[in-house]
Amino acid sequence: MDGVDPNQVVNADAPALIRISGVGKRYSGGTHALQGIDLTVAQGEFLSLLGPSGCGKSTLLRLIAGLGEPSEGTIDWPRASYDAGGKPERSIGFVFQEPTLMPWATVFENVYLPLRLDGARRQTVAAQVEDAIEGVGLAGFAKAYPRQLSGGMRMRVSIARALVKRPKVLLMDEPFAALDEITRMRLNDDLLRLWAGRGWTVLFVTHSVYESVYLSSRIAVMGARPGHMRELITVDAPYPRDEPFRLSASYNEYCRITSASLRGAMGGVGHQP
Image (cartoon, rainbow, N blue to C red; front, side):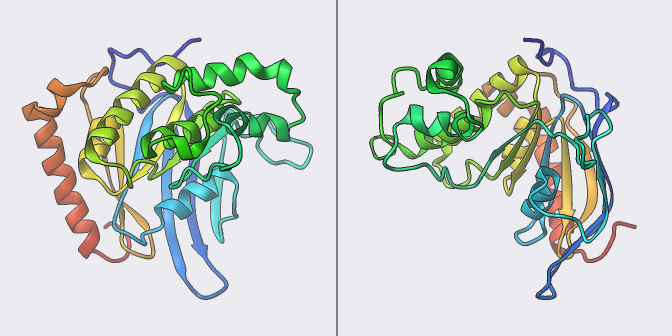
């Protein structure tokens, strides 16, 4: 399968896959979650959404996934085909903050679930399910139950379930926030390996400056509610990234720049001037 060249910096000028224009979101209870969001996501890039709690990062991710409608503005998929109702046929996998696995089902059955809901017969897609399980490093655990797995392994199952339909876009809502630092770093490495090899576009929500710099080709820093785009930071470091990058002066400088932007976002209100 064609993927991102791991030795190149991702070109943010690549063809637009998602175009977000003037998007706002108000809820019926009066909460003004998002205002004036403008963002173009390039095909094949790894883009992180970084910002203070409550700034609407998860709300934006759900709107992109089609799990809600903007109150204003548009979210376009310029390269997508459209169904009879005029809706873009998104090829999306979504990884939530919690694994939300079925405790009574095996790893295989949990990963198989999206295909089963689509009407696919187990024997027809067994190899596809096994490939997703092996791809996240869980070969040999297909018959295990969630209670037998560590927190990091359960999150790997959740990622495999999002990948089993082989999406083009992977949306991840703080998937590693509850994990210990060592497990988190290992999963960051595994995620980059999968991204480079499988040609996804990734949108990744995080609170961690260090995680966003390590993973991303670009970081969209969002300001306090109503959530708005404050700054886009390009991380011009080549892939693959590894421990030497984490220890490099370049990594530390990007973390410093991103931290300063986040501090401004936490104290700022309204739109970026």
